[in-house]
Image (cartoon, rainbow, N blue to C red):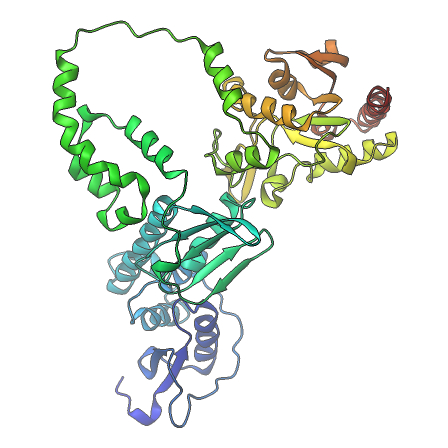
Amino acid sequence: MLMNAASMVQIRLGPGADLDGFRAAARSLVAAGTPPEAVVWTQGGAADLFGAPVLPDGPPLSLPRAAADLVQLVVCHRDPERFGLLYRLIWRLTHGEKALLEVMSDPLVHRLAMMGKAIRRDLHKMHAFLRFRRVETAKGERFVAWFEPDHHILAAAAPFFRNRFGSLDWTILTPEGRVSWTGGALVFGPAATRDEAAAGDGFEEGWRDYYESTFNPARLNTTAMRAEMPKKYWRNMPETAAIPGMVRAALSRVDGMMEREPAMPTRRNPDKAVAAMQEAGPHSLEELNRIISGSEPLVPGATRAVLGEGPVGAAIAFVGEQPGDQEDLQGRPFVGPAGQLLDRALAEAGIERSATYLTNAVKHFKFVQRGRRRIHESPTAGEVKHYRWWLERELDLVRPGLVVALGATAALALAGKAVPVGRNRGLFRFGDRPGFLTVHPSSLLREPDPQAREEGFRRYCEDMRRIRELAAA
């Protein structure tokens, strides 16, 4: 279609990935019947002498889910043609080509798919190679990181760090903008300079030692290393300072390994290792929670670690199995349906929830994705064992008068061995800790028979009354 200048429509969007501005403009343009050839897309800067036309709002567009996802990704790309290409895609989808995205040989579809792939890769690099450094401010401890993404991905990447490090105060600085988290909301701000970022902290030496200890000189492959960890990110990563030295020494280390006589591995005393871990800390619940929040999940799934909640020195500590779907989303223990049932039982027994300490044996939500649902999966005995040291240290720091195991998984974690709940329900001792064993509230929710469910809840309330009496004794 041949267009003259007078018939062209100019759309001016905000800088970077202006997703909201693009969506509004696309709705208005489609509603007005404006073809892609008649639209000029610009970003930022001052308005023209006569100003861009004010378009009326258009109705929502009905697009395939895959198209909406692709739009959300591609607006983050640096290519100045991206808005024009996306509007051309939307125009064709809404004008008779509903299955367009299935035609990967189409030049427009292929180009947008490649742009979306570049954004996913950039997000992955930011998630993997961004390094926080601890700084002390007038308001306390804060973690600051500097990163230079290839595209406009700061807003798209921020939720990952909010979910992963939700218990910490942090700021990410980039040449385009900054985002801060103080536990309540993500706050975006102006562009930053590298000088604003912290130069280093006390963790870096330990981090480099750990990286060096995991390096196997016999498997040195510099091509694969550069492909997996591009050199442009090295200057912001403390461990990479050790790479040149490790590469230079790799050959001599391998020769030394070949020359040494094979020997049986030295058997280590695990008691000494455990004692050393106890001695090394952490020395406060806050310090332990920072370690847990910063650790990778040991079970599949989980977007964040769900920490224990309640006062140090609480008379009663309730230990459940693991966070559920709602706990994972909200970042708090026992807020889903099972937690609400526990709240009812506590109220019936006269126990104030805020005066107790609530936690789980496993700190991350294990699940499998089925459609849009996240289906709970019980942790294995090995996974419970992996988390046990955290739980033991947590209870050492909280120092509750009575520890209550809610269900078999909690009993396994506390006792270090399988404990049948049905035969041992009631007063129990977990090592040196006085305790009580009862069922997990989710087992009552799964009871199909209403009468049995009601009877189960009545007995559960009796357990809670007994727990209150034991804690008060």
